[in-house]
Image (cartoon, rainbow, N blue to C red; front, side, top):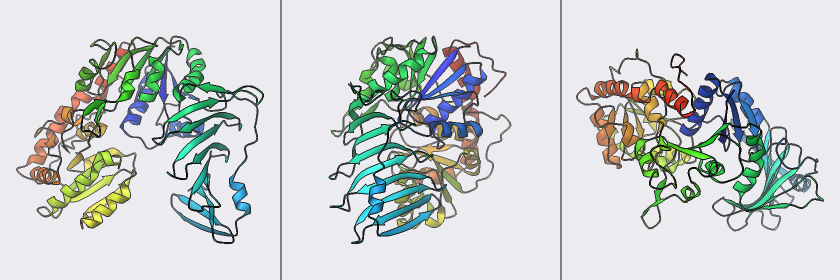
Length: 513
């Protein structure tokens, strides 16, 4: 049986476009007769508990073999070590405590007899301790350590904070059995450096690695080489590096999939290539192919990545299940939709401002915001300031996306940048057109103006005009029909066929994933 290994930095339940694409591919591989091995390469704990639940829910195949790079089986140490739980020391000094919580969990804060803040414990909604913060006695407002626990209450990571920036600047990571795996320094931008790995006993010398990736590769190599002639796929920039360097991996080939943009505008306003691309060279190490989600990016990467050409660098679109019996939207519901992560680059604030303008003309409209993220509270405050809170509902994260596309007349995608925008084709498959702003990767490829959506200027006025246009001259019916007519290009069958050809299999399209 041929083996395909999938590298992922971490696993979880809140699935964005990248994670959905990987989980879908695992099902395709399993259904097509491949042995599937999922390797979690980041320092994540509770991996087996998480993947067991993902299997139970059918999100990943039951037959998937799970390997966690930093779990007990693969860490360098084997002897149990005693870890000092620093949080116990401040609790001995505790004179007062304050507990408060919500449906997401609870926090207990501790104070000494003089009212100085000592630290806190944070618990999940299931009552499992997630982390403890320890504050400096001499400066109670400053955090000095954060201790992270797994679901069994074992210490898995300790972060040491810088008093000036309130950011972690050093960390130590432990295995399931409490053995120290590594320590490293952390830069202000979060990257790890000066990485030191620890061996089987305290008597042996530590190992200095040239980078965090080199340490990961050292742990990864024996796992990959235990499956000779396998294919290894990576969808994240930091794990494609394993395939492009000569780490001694013994596999048939390595495939790197780039889901994000490869360029950005720097502080000087110049369009520049992201630095991590300099680490990639095709036909070096085991990297034999580079895939992208869109045609334009594949063409551009052939001029950027060493060794890239039309034979080894090409696009593989995301795929969705299409329904030929689904009818276009006949009548407007008056509901608009944003579905996705609530982060600054998604520019949901622009959607809110454009929607607020459109309400002056079409006061009956409503906006559903489905998703979560770091700027949710800011967006809720903006809706209040725009006096549109009665017309906007924040629903949080959901797995059932199809329901929302079918309720909505139209969805928005106005990001600063996109690698593809899976939500676009999910919407088209449900007859839901999109209002998009200029974005050369994804929206510019998928949305054809006045056919399956509307292209608008990236201003509140542009968004507002597009919304008003949607409800004039029976345009909604036309765009909904266009959505269903054009989504066939992104059908699951086509996606399946292309992947099986890449992996050297003759596609059997009778079985659709």
